[in-house]
Image (cartoon, rainbow, N blue to C red; front, side):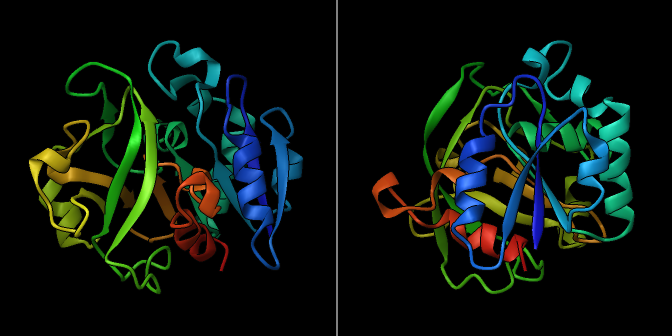
Length: 225
């Protein structure tokens, strides 16, 4: 399975994403420049990696989301129901491109946050999460604009589109476990079709035990199935 990893100017997590996906059996990651849409068109899925695309000018992800040629291919892949994963800045790009609902706002305490957090699997009905056995996943975050907002957040729950939430170590929810002020502790959502996932934490930074956790593989393995 070929997974294209898009490299926008300012992206800085593409190599970690490549190495993490490369560790998964029968997965062939490919680094793709945002100026090479033809190469992406042949892939079976796409990962929009984290970083600071175009220096986060205007709004985070806004310029990348309006990169017409490469985003045209991403939207065509969405129409073909191919798996699309946006991590951190990739999540921001997906919301700016209207491939996911809602918006990522400045963190509640207006500071960049970089630390390990715990994720609760809020729904097992997504192919991104359906076979995850763990109650809680240990994965790091690193963002300044990660506060998820949606004008009708209950609709996301009603449609079973909230897949991951910030939680305590035992998987229970609390405001103290919410690092950025996201509505209902939301850390990851899908589109209505379920093939697009936006995720603020970085699974590519949690795929080897000596990095501190292998829980990121739980998400990346499902993405590539």
